Length: 387
Image 1 (cartoon, rainbow, N blue to C red):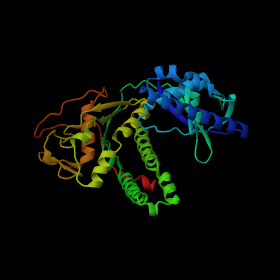
Image 2: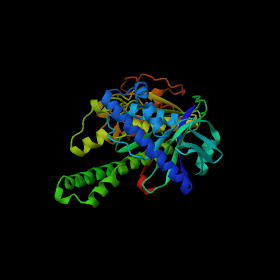
Image 3: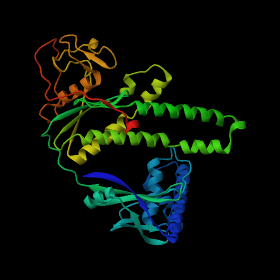
Image 4: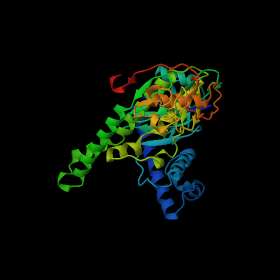
């Protein structure tokens, strides 16, 4: 089973919108009250907080489940970052949220409301295949539009490794390089992140000076909040979808284990260190894994040690094989190719040519007849800014 989140638009009547707004305000009030008690008692255990504040939350007009959800939200965050909760969202469970055709039934301070949803073919596709609805979250954006994020459980096909093995090398210059020769450029992501870094520094320097701290500048700072994060997620969604669409059920996707990468490597220059610390390796891997699982593709994580220094033709391992950041040239047999694609080919080899997800040790040899288990061809880098 796989858990998915579907963001659907609600179309409430004016009376229903007022009830939803009051529910958000009461829920935020309950969270702030719980946070105040948690800090005073120095405990964020939801079981202890429930004994302290449950009666007070019910007196606010919340149902029993919504009161428990407010306590759970405060206990989950543990108060480390939350200073004050604003009435922008409300958590729901299976008892307080249910689907009725193309409408959603929500528990509010004015009782149970049935609100129609605006569904697209994408939403209908996954809702028709959903085994259960685990709950969701009610939200209201800055323009006053209402949304509900539905958490659904869908069945995934069994990933039987019966097809080919495709390696994926992650990086910054190339967002992803596949053993098939396809390359996805990361230039647009690097450029946009550096742009937002410079923009935030410029605005922050003006906000620190009282004479330039205008209302329009504060509004600009608020608009920039989360904009970079949303852009990064969009680019990674497009890249992961492009990779998974090129696979067939039964294929094996070999990705590198990059845990502890930032502690092992260093970069020179402020811009390079900024990108190195914030590059979304983990998020990209997470998106690849869940999309591959939905398609019946098995994901294997292998050790990336020396993958960019090993010749995929003869198996010769030498640091001097990688002549630059882009070019790989074997000093033993003369094989030459893109360095990131060579690393992806070695990742696929380590995952196992039979598609069973078993890692094979690389043979250290200077030269000899060895063939890569699978076909590969050259490819062009894909720039997402051009579509």
